[in-house]
Image (cartoon, rainbow over all chains, first blue to last red; front, top):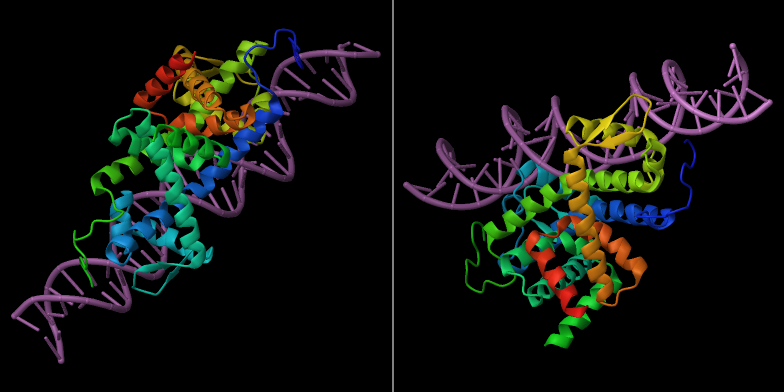
Length: 151
Length: 151
DNA sequence: ACGACAATATAGCCATTGCTATATTCTTGT
DNA sequence: ACAAGAATATAGCAATGGCTATATTGTCGT
């Protein structure tokens, strides 16, 4: 009853181990970049809408405290997504703009797809916020072509 | 150029603030329970397949180190999802079994739905692992009814 | 029965992402 | 021009989820 009590005899629910390891690894990876994408996407939206992205606005939109935002902005600056001047709003670098554009497009596709399935706009918005970060290129294409088929 | 440079004049990309706050809040919430669901679901699968769930197997499947699993199991035990005897495998409580069943069903629906869209089984498996935790009841229903329409 | 090895437990470290409290700087109205 | 208020910066704390190294306990074969 130690190493392999019931080896591969009935092979019920368990999927291939290596595939599952890879899935979890990739999920942990997505989790790491998730917040960065949310920030950059939101900053791009705030700039597009109001001309600037201030910490208080970011904090308010994300529902977190301002120092939380300040800390994250340092990280985003260190990673080259934004530029910040002390006591001023932040601006996206070229790299930041690229990431924002990609995130925004993906977000939009996911949300539209959910709506096309008949899901209510509010639920679609909430679910898309979580789902968008875990959608691979292949799945995104499938969503897109499904949308094209409908309209 | 300070409080509201371009108030609600062209109202471009930005969605309603309260809705967005709620979305992010809910996403952070899902993130908190995500790992718990993964563990409980995996433990259920291991038990169903081999009769027991050992730390080494869980660690191997998740792709993390054994002490990481040990720490998480303490948390799961504290929250009443599992029962553990020292130096023995873990077992699900009634509460744990319920959560596992729900998670497994949701996971299965999401993965089947992705496959039905024509996505490759490998990608569907990987994406489902991340997506499943962010799918609301309403979206799950939509996935289900879409699957029913196809088969 | 007991030694070797496998599995689990524990200690202590690090990074991340949240928070509150407080200091500093900017902006604005009079 | 300057005081008051708004925004940003910084310090320090907690919880979570990883890790390595090592001690302890179980189990199995001979």
